[in-house]
Amino acid sequence: MGGQDKGLLHYQGRAMVSHVIDAILPQVDDLYISANRHIEKYQTFSYPVITDNLANFQGPLSGILSVMQQVKSAYLLTVPCDNPLISAQLRQRLMEALLATGSDIAVAHDGTQLQPVFALIPLRLKQSLSEFLASGQRKTRDWLYQHKVVEVDFSDQADFFININSPDELTLKPEIRSTKPLLGFAAFSGTGKTTLLTKLIPALKDRNIRVAVIKHAHHNFDIDKPGKDSYQIREAGAEEMIIASDKMMALMKKNHDDLIEPELQPLIQRLDTRTIDLILVEGFKHERFPKIELNRTELGTPTLYKDDPHIIAVASDNAIASDGMPFMLDINHIPAMVDFIEQFIFSWKS
Image 1: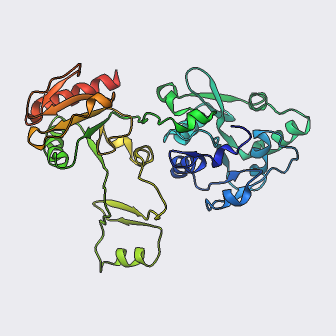
Image 2: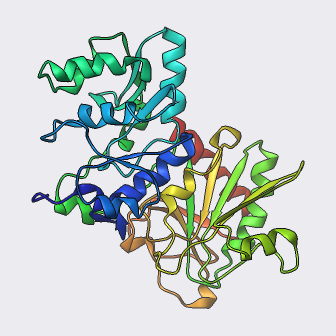
């Protein structure tokens, strides 16, 4: 990157480290940033910034040791700043493997190679790491394998391990990653995406398919009501507000004015995918993930599939010259659309 600080380079409109923070924050109790330059810029992310105690920038292990020397937690989960896509199951899988095998350290393996900086390390190994660095050694892998290491299989999520190592990669919009089948509906305004969803979801439920929905709103909206206690608390300045009852829970987080349009990837990572079989997405048509295009003849809008290779089918109320489209659906025939979605789920799993 020409000597630039990768964590601060903009990816998808914001600093790369902010993507990492969003992905890892739900998985940890406390978060720390290890950095040795541009300290003030890293401090603007509102998390403690810890610099290396050893001089001359002695590599990732030096940063890990410096954090181990200042925190009280029993374990340290480490991730790099140049990997904006991180599995929402990283901590869970590493900890489960550690406990199941009685190992000292758990490290991610993407099915092809070890990912040594994606690791769960107990702080009881702090002295071992200090002695290793004092001996003049620096290689992360060499220190890890001085201990009992369990390599945790993430081959089913290999695409989450994508380092950004060149300026060209910074501008490439990645495909959306999800551990559960993900299917969107792309259409122009007025096509009836929401109306269709309200028909599809009960039909999918009748086939025992549990659905989560992510919807993009193009305008200011609020799910809370003026006058309610929660509304007053949030308006008083709370950055995040959770309302919970025995029936449901809602999290409201204020987006600041200088933020760009919401991104689909971090929203997916907020879902509890253990309770669902399928994620349906309304909007986000410019993101790279499988979609069904919705088209109604009366609107006279152009088709989208020719410019989006991720559109896997077109649902319309009239025949369309397919020009190589893989599948055509009748937008008014819900059972046929559910059949197609069910086959999509099956093909995703296989």
